[in-house]
Length: 159
Image 1 (cartoon, rainbow, N blue to C red):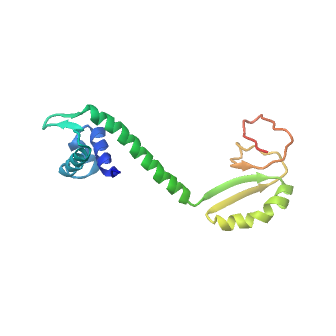
Image 2: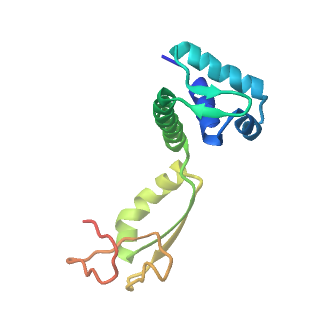
Image 3: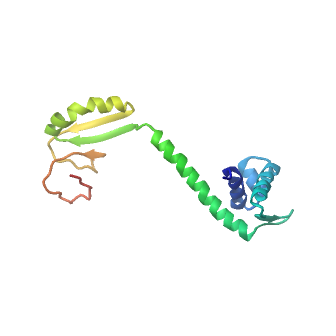
């Protein structure tokens, strides 16, 4: 398995249209960047770019490697984001509304456990039997008991 570092530097060179511009954008010496690309070419046993003092041209196989390398790097970033998301602790404010009976019978017993488990969550709970306008009142969730969805407000209803 090839380390992603060489592919990363190669894609940066292609994205920036040359070694000098990529080195400036990355804040590293051009010679170091060139060494990474040369090492990748050596590992793959193929020339990815034709370069001279005045020209920089990606070879045909270089374009193919670039396409795959870009996809690999995007997937690697997605994997890191997935881990960060999984490790992230829920936080913020949840604005919710529910009827009095539901608050007393179902929410009251479980809310202390929920708030203990998620201390970074701030719950603003409106307990009322009145009909609420979820959008106008800025609610994130409204728990209501209805026999048939009205559908007049474009909201999602689950049973």
